[in-house]
Amino acid sequence: IPYNHNYELLIQDRRGHKPPPWGFFGGGIEEGESPLEAVIRETEEELTYSLTEKDIVFLDTFERITEKRNQIISWVYTWDFRNQNLSDFTLCEGSGMEFMPLEKVYQLFKYADNIAMLDAFKQKFHL
Image: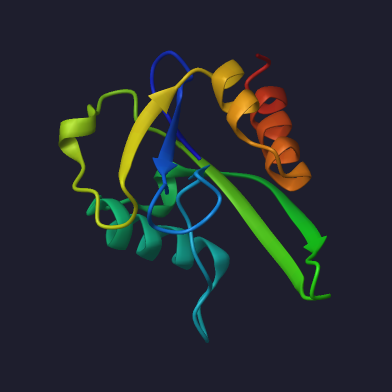
């Protein structure tokens, strides 16, 4: 979960790409890859931005079972984009992106695991 100097979160506009309409950037872990390595690779693939391990802070792990009884495990990390603007990134997936206040993100996100991720972010930074 990238954030800026106002603790606004960088959220992906997925409308016309894949549901839900708004979401976090991220993706799957490839074979032989650690969750941390996946964050670095996915950030490069989706935003053409190079992170290093020292840029990233682990938040928590979340599990959920889908309607089709598949288990989804999410390793959630955050990083500080305080010195970056949207123009510093090239969007490669989705319809757009936006830094949004935490309160607005809570309104847009409906899935319980996404709400839990927002709660973990809020707790981490005492917001």
